[in-house]
Length: 250
Ligand SMILES: [Zn+2]
Image 1 (cartoon, rainbow, N blue to C red):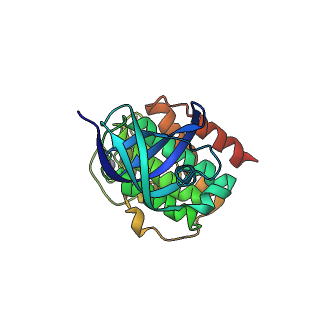
Image 2: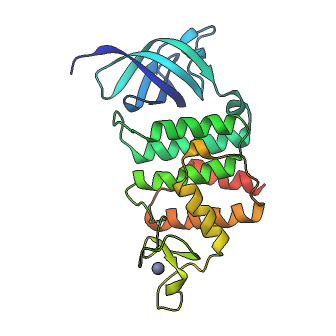
């Protein structure tokens, strides 16, 4: 494909030095998914392109691309930054992990569809002060589908019941209702409120989530389940996740 100029909407999330004063940045775009961009002269003082491509900058970027490999940034329009995420170490670490997750679920220049608005809304909410742990858990749960391992959280995976008391089974890949608790089925023995929270986060649209107060203990319980689900179904071992877990422990 010949190189052409296109305008994309996206968010910058990884930068590294490249050649003399250039950088390579990853940008998550609405139109073409993840793109690696070369930003010439970005490290020079007063570089306009450099200033518009700090981590967690978002807006419209005009790029020269042949839809594979490294594209080049030409100019930009209406770029803003998620300041709170940029400046706050904890928010920064959560956001970096979420973008890292997307980076591992998709190939470059592969359209990411519904996950673009999901990630942008999540970042907006984190930047605006929503409960960062809850927003992160919601995205983690929804991202499982992108990795091809979508758990059944809507109805009992055995009988299809949608209301009642539920547990989760890693082996079966979904919730099971209490009609089967005495059967010989491998399950996690979770409290029903933990399963309720997980179901809500999995099934709710992120736009509908409000800043409800969820206890620290409940958030910790659901986090443990999500971490076990990820460890059982996928082999990711992301540095950003390890860093985040260590930071949250402090
Ligand atoms: Zn059932």
